[in-house]
Amino acid sequence: MKVLIINGSPRRDGNTSIALKEIAAQLEKHNIESELFWIGNKPVRGCIACNTCQNNRCTFDDDVVNRVIEKMERCDGLVIGSPVYYGQPAGPVCSLQQRMMYAGSSVFANKPAAGVCVCRRGGATSAFQTLNMPFQMTNMPVVTSQYWNILYGCAEGETSLDAEGLQTMRTLANNMAWLLKKIATGEGETPVLEPREPMNFIR
Image (cartoon, rainbow, N blue to C red; front, side, top):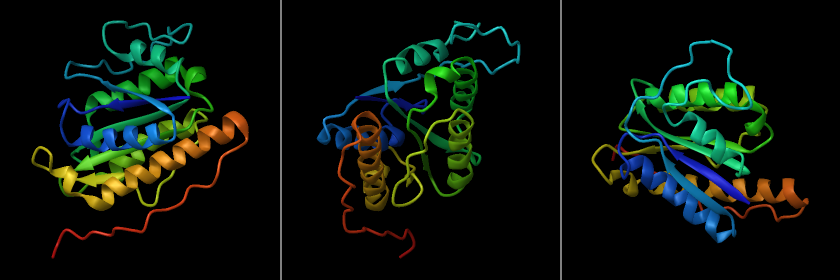
């Protein structure tokens, strides 16, 4: 089994990457392979509603969208991570999601999925909801965690200090592994929760 983990930040090794690598490391403990894919910092076209997509491919082939669809054909689950800009996921992430899930909806259907957001302070819940809505429209089971999949950090590397956020990523990975195994074999033990590490940022 394999999970595609998409880094939607324009910074390859920023705070979003820290969150996603925590998921990948935890999946590995369950013997589940993952591929971390950075979408880069070049423009991603928005959907123009041309309705000319065919064979699970977008008609525009000059950005990462069709490459991601091709990768999902070989994957069993999906995680999309994004920084929060003005209460929304990064623009290229929204464009990617809309085009790849419209053009390649049958590739994504019935594969477990989760969104992850990293923010400085606020707007994360609305961005998180935005990431999750296309999953529900594409018949993808949404993988839960112990809290919303949100981490905090501004300066480079600061997300590594968010103990509760990182624990939420591990719990998400445990739940993803459990669900993938249930779908594939009908087997798998219910995940054992770590002792909670609640954090407040005003002390």
